[in-house]
Image (tube, rainbow, N blue to C red; front, side, top):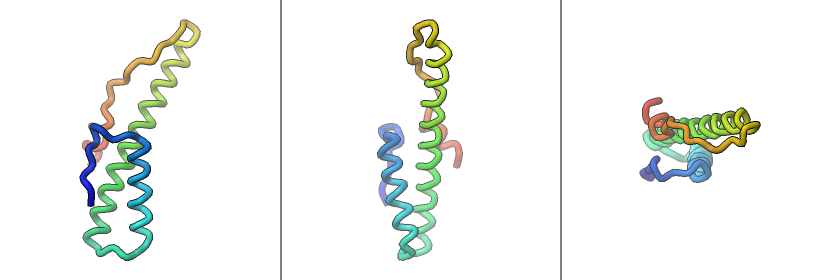
Length: 88
């Protein structure tokens, strides 16, 4: 199984990897140990994607609220790496 660098990972790449893992798991040809590793990696990727979506949602909410006053994008301090690693 591949090593994932969550610091460099994009949402789109995480979804691509997650979809490939699911396809391999659904194929039913993986040994139990590999299936367990794929599942664990999939959960981490899922948490990463969820955190990324939450971050974007917060940015959009901030922008919409500030739009009347010429709102600007602001960084949200939640780390998606933290979210992915602390969930497990």
